[in-house]
Amino acid sequence: MQYVSRSTIGHLSGVVLVLLVPIALGVVLDGIVTDLHQMGQFPWWVVQFGTPGETITIYAQMVAIVSNILVPLLIFALGYHYGKTQTETPFLR
Image (cartoon, rainbow, N blue to C red; front, side, top):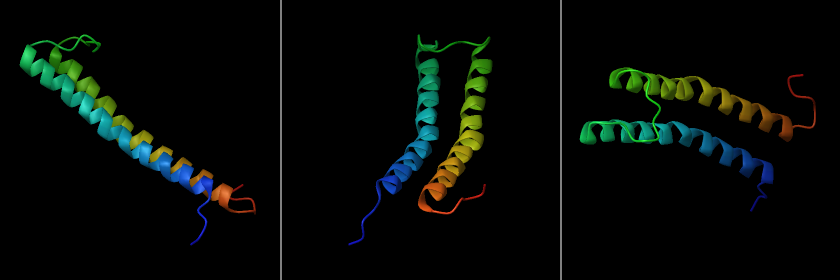
């Protein structure tokens, strides 16, 4: 059995957590829309931006930005950092 370094486990945990962020944001957005549909109002913790349609659109755009821009950048950064920690020679200096 090969030894798996702590760095590898930490980086894999980071990747899994980063990949769970869009799922969590989608669940929150679904909860907002469900409350709006069932009760006719937003939950107390939601900041409103004008009409309900505008508010949902802004939150959906925030989820899209995080999912399509920030998550891939964080995955790349974790891979870059992992590569630097696993090699003894300077990596992409």
